[in-house]
Length: 458
Length: 96
Image 1 (cartoon, rainbow over the protein chains, first blue to last red):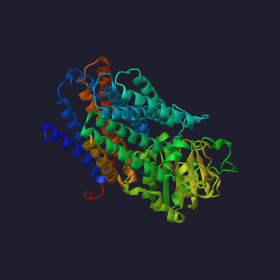
Image 2: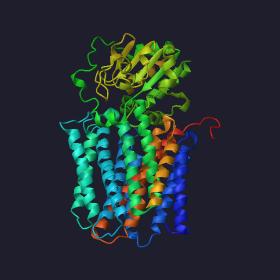
Image 3: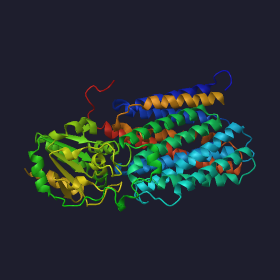
Image 4: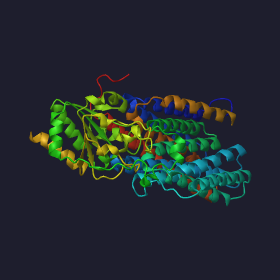
């Protein structure tokens, strides 16, 4: 940073400020869309500034950017809202890959860059590699291509620790020597391996936390690449993402009453099949759509608790229709959304918004829990762990301590479920066996449509 | 380097302050929006195309491709999500 501000320097400062403003605007419902546009404009400006640098290869850049934009844009336009978490994980992985590659370039032999740049470049390689492979594994788990249960094997944490240390040592060597080319593929493979090891042991139920954390990593990797390249805009944008991702991760952990280390290292939900909290047996009481209709028809106050099951069944539009019938019938309807319902932070909000459900109808657990006794019917659609009363009552349950939506205290609970299988966390749910619980088995979309049909026929 | 590290430290505080107390409804768009920002490495990738050498060129193209997918895909998907949030009537006079 020399004296005086060059024109490109001024543009770069403008770009940094626009990133800040954009992120700030994204924090409010009314201005979120504008915020995203401002942030995209900041990115465009940063790209223009980069193109002004001497010696860049325009032919290569235009072809590559065109291909990348087509792939990314096509995927973004075509993806179903239910598959959004997987896609965001994939995008995040590609961001990590980019930082990994840029870091490697700075470490190549004969680059003659300063020692500090080599150090930060090696950090970009390691963190970028973890963000890349971790995101790919998260993608696999979110889309069900990889077992969603935690994959745990003996000495896993020890192996992880050794791998991390090995990566750091190799990074040290490749920083110190600028001619040992062969160290770079070793470093890359180690970083990718650490990312795989870290994420395979995390259960599907914790994916909202992991996705936010990996998002944070890819930002930090970009910031380190920025330190290596002496690029302020890379540092500012990367750090903003890193810090905001950490805040979001923290919010998710709070919503589950777990620490981040518990999420990352505990192999949560892997040992449940062999006991803990799974003893409840007894009769469940099934109900059919007609009786559900009768219950809802007579109810004055209804809450609807959506979960990932609603997303899988694509039931959000049918749910919206049912809610409309209920409101027409004079019933008070609220949607109660748990912060970790679904597969990424805020997943349910996106789906309900897609179906056109009003923002004012959405409530958080704390809004309804204190007055749960006044609710006549709680309709649980494909949610499981977030309404499990064991989280409140059973110290032996792996979910114990997680804040839940206490639907068991409502007069009647109707649970829509495909079968008696456990939730994503693999934990049994005593809610299903309670006296005031009725189980409406079957495909959620079909069931809801049938109940709504009864209203329409009325 | 000192100045750059100072930039990093200050930005991290800014990032934390900016994201404090975000309504949970906005978690998903915020995450996918900030995910798009993490594609900022596109800047490094563009500059890296000027570096001589076979390996540097290959890595620069790889970085550029990956970062572009991240940036374009991230912004488009975030915009799609926010479109749905604002698709129906906003709260009357909800502008600050």
